[in-house]
Length: 319
Image (spheres, helix red, strand yellow):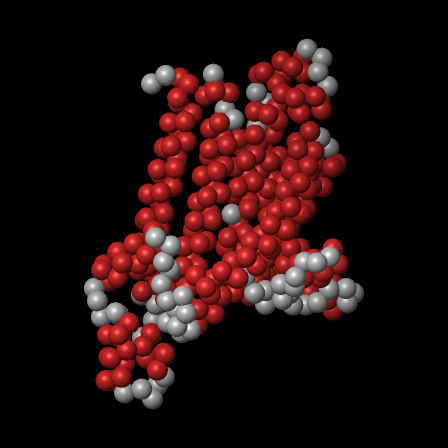
């Protein structure tokens, strides 16, 4: 294979692996939700329903069909964009998810815009000043934040900003962002909670990636030739650390996929994670499965994108 085609071959390979992983995950999601305790028909009809009524509803909903047949039918629907119909609301799942998904994407977008620049700046700065007081303070703060679970951070945020200071509401209802003040009040509490954990992980991983690159021989040679430490990092180390930094950002932001479930539940934020939690309580299987697949697709997309950036940014593969 010509050397110029190697990066594109590796990118195609990563995409293929992501597609296979998605199929495996869909299998796990479907059968894991199918094993949830309780009978969907019985839950929908109530405890007073007769066995005949329950059996008739199960037949009408197709729950008596073999599990593998229902899985293949559901997978075919996913491939064509048909997410099925909600058992509880008798509405298309895509219609139920649409507005909630937009709300979750807004929350993730605001968190990303707020977190990534700060985390990368602190991580790169700590690497440049390795061993200094600034580096030690940043390391201690990040380890402290990582050690605290997100529900505890959310509780502290409510106590400080909502109870003691009275600056922000304790609950977030996803208000329309028509001004900076509205954005602050609507997203501040969830963003504070998510940013703490996301930024802490990103700072540590970015610092480690930059330090590993600084320790390479070509960067040390630049330093011996008289390059300043800032020039050595920004001009020589940072471009070659782009791949590891992209992975650090992707892995940290992937926390938004799972961590947002806790945050949306605590702050009553009307996102897709809150919708999934409500669907579990009513055993609305099509809705649970669709929400879970959206989380899985988001996670795989971030990781695959980071892998592709790392491949394309590798000078040894470009030349």
